[in-house]
Image 1: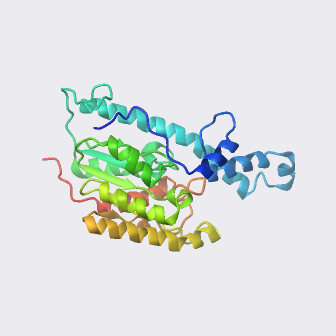
Image 2 (image 1 turned 90 degrees about the vertical axis):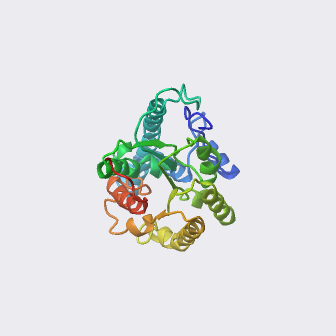
Image 3 (image 1 turned 90 degrees about the horizontal axis):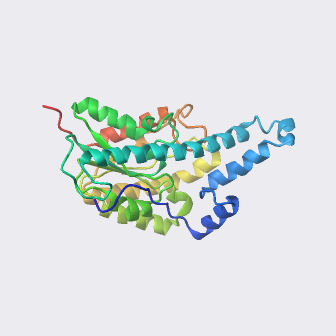
Length: 296
């Protein structure tokens, strides 16, 4: 392993986003996304006396703002969960003090390394283990009878270039399964030309047999915004599939599994999948994972 996993790196952001989040987070609070900034401002607005009288506080906008605020708290809690989990896995693997140097004891059991963003963290589920990583891990153990372990290197808010520059270097020298789901945040933060270049660079750099996840297609949700984004997301998915095919890498088609009807499939922030929604993601990933050996 080329580096310690003691502290997850910060994600990159363009200059305009740093300025915007810095203005919204005076006092040194963590940087926020545009969705969080709008929702936070909205939560202040919906708590005014005028909002109570007008009904804005109890309306859809107020509930959405509260949902995003709750997700922000979960984001920190889920990150702490996976950090502690990763530390334990590394200790069991025999890495001394997070130095990357193997110790004398090695634990049996296949290793799954996860690369990605907040969806790999499970944000939106009731607990970190309720996301697609936790659900798939349980199924891998059930199907094979083996004590599968997972090293979850994902970081909420990550862009494709963050996986390439900071998550890949943290990978151990050997993993029995590697998965990578990234690209949703790039839609907000990255120009199309750079987004496609970054995706191709990442897919060229991941280990052989890495299973890539394509992006959900927001048809029928988020109103006009969802409809308008479908062609762009479809183009991104086409790029993922083409670049993966050139390397012979499998693709988990989240786009073909995470489908309407939407009620119950999204978290309160109306952006992340709920635990039920992650079941669709889990099915997509399990259908793309190469055949795995079972316990003798």
